[in-house]
Image (tube, rainbow, N blue to C red; front, side, top):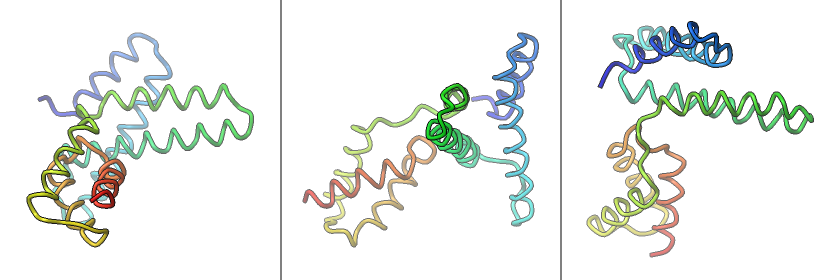
Length: 155
């Protein structure tokens, strides 16, 4: 797979050629967020370049921010601005890797719980560590946590 940052840069150039101001602005903001994350990574002793997991984290953060902004705009009666934020979130979602479905996550959690003999809320930490390692950028932690809780409480 091509470097995700290169894909964003290529898509930005295409948006500029097409005169798509909304996409252009969204991708510029994403590139700035990626650059800032790389700089923070260098400051923390890392090499600076983002792996796929870190890239997906930056994208997810941007999506979450836009959804939160849309909610605030709706509360303020600004449906036009809320719709713009939702469109931008949609643009960013195209940069996430194929997400694991809830059925796939649930099956993996159930198998791990059975294999390890886990039960109760105390096992959530161990289960979360195993599942976030397994799914990486393909699933967000909130979804894994919700399903893990359901499985552990249902046992």
